Length: 316
Ligand SMILES: [Zn+2]
Image (cartoon, rainbow, N blue to C red):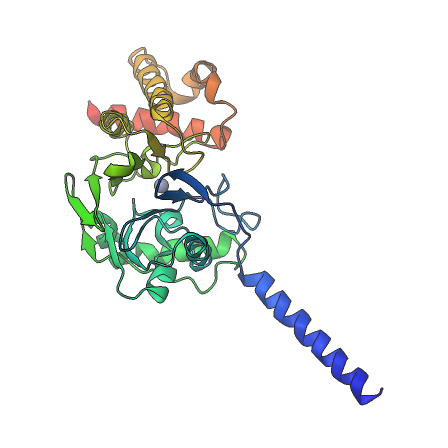
């Protein structure tokens, strides 16, 4: 083989290997949606973390203030956080100064690592129980779960916990904007905060509100989740960003509340008549007809009925 051909073969192989390495670590692109004057969201795919969705399934968002960018839930991995940073750079050169994490579930906050790598001074804010649980090791379980579900795609991701605790009623004034905190007790995960970007009339609801998809309820309560819907509906924001699924207006809050209350009230009624969870399932599923097409409905509804029974028993 002539030297020039050898060289081009070597370059070709080098290019192929670089391309493959990128393909293995860089996350697929998703569009950025502008939902208010200074507010943007990447709506992630629905479902459980998988090889197919590369572990990305939440709604990372950000608000551009006069001086800096405020991020809410930078996603499920180092790679998702990097995607978010790439998207931020398409609309502003301002640095990220603050990150809010809505709750303990790792699909919402493992992207913290990417933000801190790019902006070491960024302040990470969460519910005190989120911070405590991550520091006690729950973050490592989420890192391992993401790695396993994506067959190693999210490898390199590390748990970076928030350091600033917040509570119900707190307000953060950042770059001329107000970020108001709602922390409903015993809602989706016992670690929840919702963030209202006041001037934008936008609420980032975390997994207290979902749209077109059904939540895990194993870490929360129905009673608290219904109360969280009422609490955040009273804000009367123009835009609600759910933890998963499309952003919408107040109707998505009513709709999700209706799912929770229909299920919970019906379980209560049938439990009072002495029925067990499997005996009540068919009639409850029939009453939830508008939600049957929602993502994860068939996987979660049976678990929700069983959890509702346990919650009712605990209330007695
Ligand atoms: Zn969650």
